[in-house]
Image (cartoon, rainbow, N blue to C red; front, side):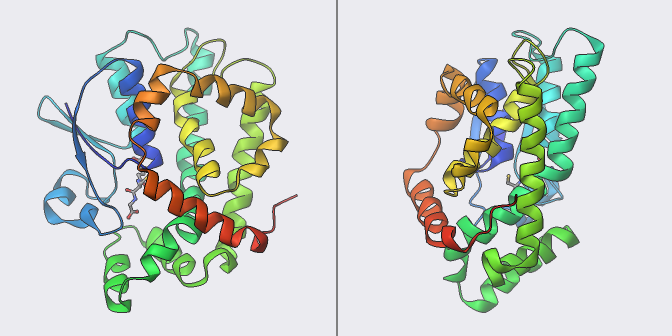
Length: 259
Ligand SMILES: N[C@@H](CCC(=O)N[C@@H](CS)C(=O)NCC(=O)O)C(=O)O
């Protein structure tokens, strides 16, 4: 099993959490996303969207983090990360869809507006323009250019931050009713959300967590698991985390927190 990933990438973290929970070993191939390794032709053959993660297993190429995690669940059903009832499974999948459709794009906007921007702005203008031009998806390319240019003052930032918090509002409502996002047991839904709560911490936006007492308790529990240590803490590069946090603190006063 070979995983093309990046230590800081939310989608990679989500897959690493499931690999760790299932105690699966993998060969690691780290892609430097800031230098554009994801757009090299060899990698684009595996993942035409030019994104991580990509899993290669038994000569098959598996992309899309949510689908990778479902695939891992199918191949390695124990310990199970799927709830037992059909309705909970539906709720799990609906939640993961909400993350993929709304939270993840919002996270990209926020991350590049705050954390990745200072490093990217150090690149020569033509190099940066060429890097952005390689992004296959048109909307993602457009949004990336906007937030690299205007940071947290790009109008899209406000929309993305509100969208991010809407998904957390939903998670908070679920967790006020039950210990885990898709029921009484840890599931793929919990590991799908975990990296996005961590990202708030990395971007110095975690003061929003005071709005979310149930989510905060849930997150503490998740962080205590061995899988979190193996999949997240053991991979995080201290320098990248410190530079994201410094960037977050530098712009914190310029961010209006949605009501
Ligand atoms: N829907 C994809 C999204 C993957 C994705 O956006 N990956 C990010 C890191 S979390 C990436 O590779 N970004 C590089 C770029 O956009 O240039 C999935 O879930 O796997």
